[in-house]
Image 1 (cartoon, helix red, strand yellow):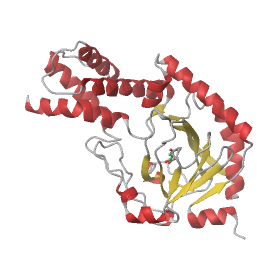
Image 2 (image 1 turned 120 degrees about the vertical axis):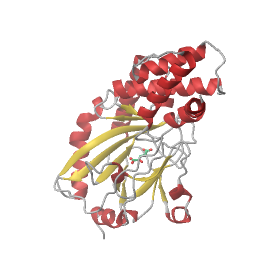
Image 3 (image 1 turned 90 degrees about the horizontal axis):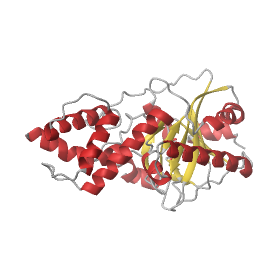
Length: 329
Ligand SMILES: O=C(O)CCC(=O)C(=O)O
């Protein structure tokens, strides 16, 4: 019979059933929910709005603080026992796929995003039961043995998940429904995604990244290819367009930070004056509010956007028409 490690090395993933008692994981889940609620309160916003803008908390964060010790001790032991060598932790996150940000995480290979500090494998621990409807993890078996492609920039507003649409993916992917207490181990080179959450229920997971202590990647990791407006460029570009817009629309010639530019635009839009370009006001206000929440949460809670929803929405509803007008004026 194949050992777990051998199966993992051949196929690039493995489901470990019942590694923890359900009650233990449920108590972790309850702490996480309480801490997320505290973060939302701190920003003075309803939990629905907070979870619409923020769907990832990278340790150290107020959301991960209560589980740091569990990861560093108990989960570390599980990781080491599984791979049968000493392991080191690279990082860990809580990821949410809530009723308010329920989209898929497109197909990607994790290692492509961490060329500077590559890690070997992830242990993905569901904090809620995950059926096919709760944003299930999907993987392409054996794809860890192929080439590493440049990191997929799924924050581009016109992004299309070509891997997901390919007949190769459609014919070969596997879905991995799991229960609280189970864990999924997957190689950092394997192609994977998480599906949309269509259940209407929130789903949280604890996602931890590990390597054997002497791990040195043998694969070639290509450089990132930054898009005009995408994951690695959208922050600076948003700041610059918002600033130029305030100057040209309202003769407001100030140099400040992103938070202030967002707030100034929110105030101007609330005045309901006619703008020299067309926007759908409700969508724009919603998009700017989510951007403000994401931005504040990034500063205060190490929060992020796992699905790439917030910046593309700001682009579609506001920055695109604004920058088109700016380039003509
Ligand atoms: O938890 C999720 O929804 C996505 C996880 C993922 O893609 C990853 O950990 O690389």
